[in-house]
Image (cartoon, rainbow, N blue to C red):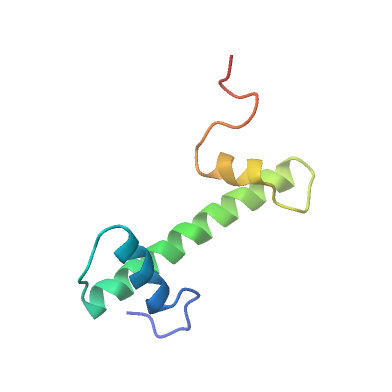
Length: 79
């Protein structure tokens, strides 16, 4: 495992896991979940920033984040 300081705390990962119905989770599993969640967040943030840049904006909007997640945005796929 990496030794660099990560953004999410183990407590936050445990809290989200418990809210999802998981009562017991091993310390190593918490670390893996944390790393994967941070990687996913980093990937979405990068894609959202690219979408904002493509639109000529410096600030990422909700629409950029939804686009980065692959979800339809306003005017896209709606009747």
